[in-house]
Amino acid sequence: MAAKITAGKKQAFEEELRYLKNEGRQDAVKKIQEARAFGDLSENYEYKIAREEQGKLETRIVELESILASCEVYEPAKGSKVVALGSVVTVEDIDTEKRSVFEIVGVYESDPNTTPKKISDESPIGKVLMGHEKDDEVDFVHKGRTVTYCIVDIK
Image (cartoon, rainbow, N blue to C red; front, side, top):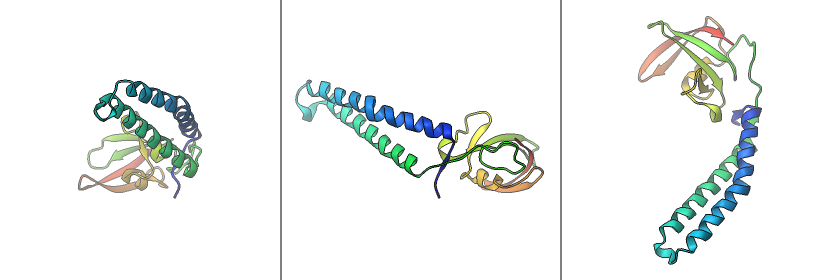
């Protein structure tokens, strides 16, 4: 199954890839050339670091090319009555009555440190919420215990 991303994230990946292939590679070559000027390559720490950075850059380029070749662009769900990609879901823990708000996103856009928490549709809670409606109760296992959430709102 192809990973899903928004058109905006796809564009950001394409821009990053363009930058890395052009300016990024040029900078890496320049750093390697400058490091070579320091002398003996076998004991040249600057050269070793420059080569490692070049390797990381090339790895990221391959990763971005792979993502872009296999990803599927989705339109965020707006006004849907069921939880889908792009939904902002408010849930309430049945036991504690604590509310949490999650935005369901593709795996490459997840960021639990944002408000609302961006969680992947492939995460345990994301999988459980997908396809459910307001007032549905869903169970998932978190840290060895089963948590029951009631879906309070979907935007």
